[in-house]
Amino acid sequence: MRPHAEDTFADELKALAAADDRPRPARWRLSPWAVATYLLGGTLADGTVITPKYVGPRRIVEVAVTTLATDRALLLLGVPGTAKTWVSEHLAAAVSGDSTLLVQGTAGTPEEAIRYGWNYAQLLANGPSRDALVPSPVMRAMAHGMTARVEELTRIPADVQDTLITVLSEKTLPIPELGQEVQAVRGFNLIATANDRDRGVNELSSALRRRFNTVVLPLPATPDEEVDIVSRRVGQIGRSLDLPPAPEGLDEIRRVVTVFRELRDGRTTDGRTKLKSPSGTLSTAEAISVVTNGLALATHFGDGVLRSGDVAAGILGAVVRDPAADRVVWQEYLETVVRERDGWKDFYRACREVSA
Image (cartoon, rainbow, N blue to C red; front, side, top):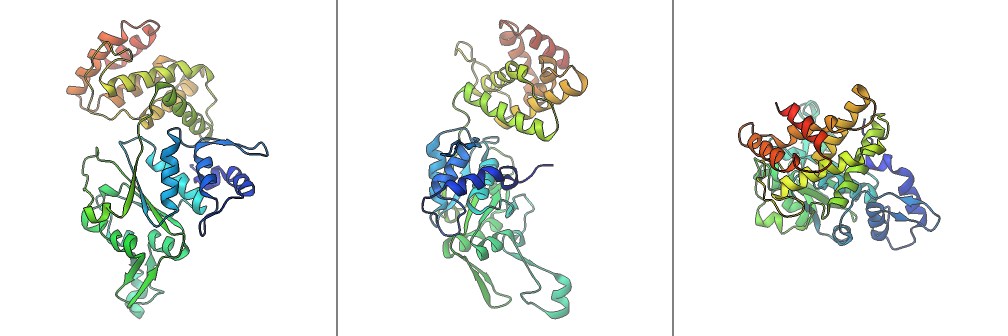
């Protein structure tokens, strides 16, 4: 349903590799310059267009790529919905050609997910051995000089997080049961993502945090930038779902982005009216979800044109997470801002209808 980045953009990666004549770190598929170009987009000398994967400050991408070219691990930090997972996947795809060496962090992630596990049938039959050992994605990345990914690092229990300290500082993973160790091959590195707004967060120890170079991914700086991001991702997702393009939907995308930014910032775009903010994050990722769902509604139950009624229910679900407090915030925003705004009458009526 969702091909990996290295498969989706295989042609772009191939074109970059062919045109890339700059120095490459050990076992990198591309040079740091080419990796940054892959993420930020550009046009190669042969006319090949590289589509942007990340829309944001260039320096952030350059710092992230440079970090991976050293022996420092990279921590992508930011509020939910700032494309941390998206960026980490594309970095791994461009650097190693494989974004699948992934540990998904949860409250129940065990040490085995980061270190190694055992095939218990072989373990009971023959005792501890290399054949009975089941390597984790991190161990495989160390052995082959590739990039591993750890998603939602701060959701992993603190004692499991600290398993990474030896890996990142000594570049080795001991296997005491065998009296052996796995030493990292040049080219190995690790990208972790984390946010501090999620419930159930486990703070990183100072010892572990020192092993990372932290890059903070900000929310889109301007409305136009956020509209561009939402439009691009909705187009990509729509194609994967066989939904027709909706060029007439740009006005609705801009409307959704405006609502999210105003409620997120606690003031209207013109700065004249202060607003209460709901409990949700109202991230760019949520805006993409709202518009994609609206596009599906317009396609399957409408005339294919994205309209206010198609996005109203999605916005309500994104804004009203706390049925009591958030509903008050939403109703106040509708009556004091949306109702009085020129050109928003249809949107106001649609939102009133779904909020009733």
